[in-house]
Amino acid sequence: ARGMAFVGPAPATIDLFGDKTKAKACAAKAGLPVLRSSGGVTSAEEARSFVDGARMPFPVLLKASFGGGGRGQAVVARPEDLSEAFARCSKEAEMSFGRPEVFVEHYLLAAKHIEVQVLGDGGRCVHLFERDCSVQLRKQKVVEIAPSRRMAPQLRERICGAAVRLCESVGYRNAG
Image (tube, rainbow, N blue to C red):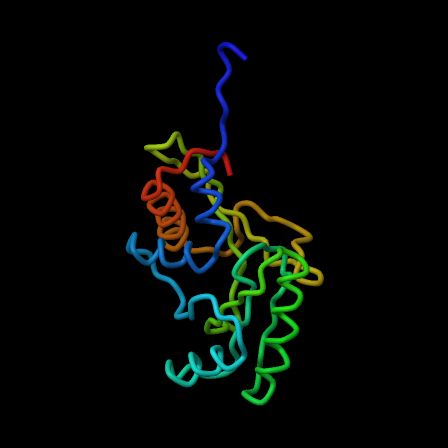
């Protein structure tokens, strides 16, 4: 309609952030710290080869390369459990998102699930601070707490600044 403007991401942005392995590579290119991880793998052998080659200690996290909501995700505590967990994650990823690829990353035992709200106009971005989404049930967010409790101001500044840098690096245009 005349005088109205679409406020949302471009298809290329959806494609980029819809693929977690591409999004992580983009974040690394933008100078953000990222966990060591594989690219998308399609077999348990590829996953094992990455873990062995990277000398990654267990536990590791298998995660669907596409989609979200905790679907296609598993913590693998022991090397002997990798093949079965891979088969389960890959199948769930394909059933849920139409793509079987998963990636392997180092698992952080005591991590918080922090998200940052970013507004972007395709050039400049601003953040609306962070929220803690760590309270979960079956890998689904139950409560979002904003701002995150017990976060040091310096860490908040680093996390929110990193989100803005990432979004500006891709010409983010969205409220999300």
